[in-house]
Every structure is written in structure tokens, then in C-alpha cells.
Length: 126
Image 1 (cartoon, one colour):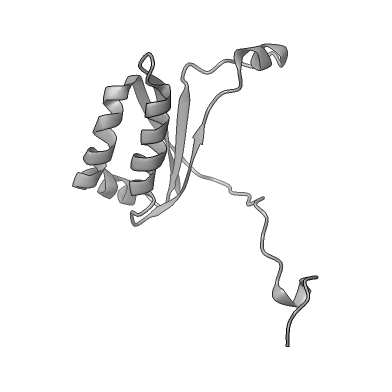
Image 2 (image 1 turned 120 degrees about the horizontal axis):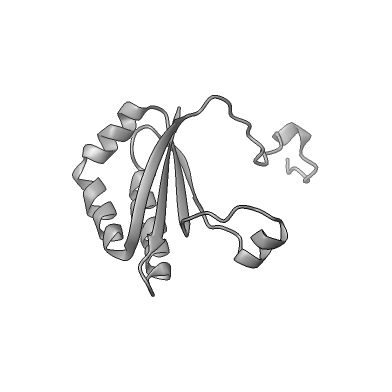
């Protein structure tokens, strides 16, 4: 499994429009592709909070992390016409776009898991 990390800074006055395009167009289309696993849009804490924590300030407003089963499947997505249809408009809303790729070496799933029906405390009807 690999991750794609895309870093974006919006053009002045375009932050909300860029965020909506990332979420509603680009990631929505990406989520339908073979090999796509999951994605998240990350935004930094406010500068005041980062200062109080003595934390580093990222150089970007948005970080998109997309998990793919393989780099080959991600490249196949990039080669499809739908990729350019949903990604190129984002470039018009962004001043700065960069990316990197990483191999996933370990995964921990901490999301809540459904309780098996036999262990559920909810009343069960006959």
C-alpha cells in the first residue's frame, strides 16, 4: 500500500472553494477508482494553538493523504480522463501545489468497529 500526499495553498479568497473542490469533486471521483483505499483532508491547527504547543507550522493550508493499494493503480487513475477533469480546476484555485509518495509499512485501525449482533446490548426481536 502507498500514500499520496498533496499539499495545497489556496489563492487569496479561494480557500472555501478549493476545499469544496477537493472534497466534492476530486476526492469523490478518486474514491470510485479501483485500488483506492481511503483519503483524508488535513488542515493545520490555528497559529496561536501551534505557538502555544511549540509545534511546527506547516507551509500549506491543505494536506490531502490518499491511500492506494499500489502505485500502479494510482498511476492508472492519473491516466484516466476523469482525473484531469476534476484535478485541473483545483490548480486554478491554488497558488502552490506539491506532492510526495510514501510506502505504508504498518497500519493500525483504531476506528470503532461494529459490535457483533450476539454481543449487542440492544433488545433483539424474535
